[in-house]
Image (cartoon, rainbow, N blue to C red):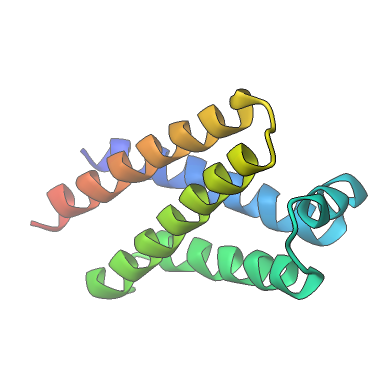
Length: 117
C-alpha cells in the first residue's frame, strides 16, 4: 500500500509541478489561461497554491488533517479545470486528463489513510 501511495502521490506532484511551471513561464499556457477568462493574478495564485500543495502532500511529517485540506484543494484544481475547459469548448482529451488525475488523487488519498491506520 505504501508503494501505491508514493507512486500516485509522486505522479500528482510532478503534474502539479509541471502545471505550476507552465502557468508561470510558458507563453502558450499563459495565453491559454487568459483565453479561459482568468486574470493573470489568478494564474499566478494557482501556480503558488499548486506548489504549496506539492509540499503538503509529499512531506510525511505534515499532519493528516492538513494533508486532507491539500487533497481538497488539488481536487478543486482539477474540477475547476474540467469546468473551464468544457465551458471553453476545448478538446474532451483535456478533461479526460483531469479525470485521470482525479482518479490518481483518490487513489493517493485512500492509500494515505490505509498506511496511516
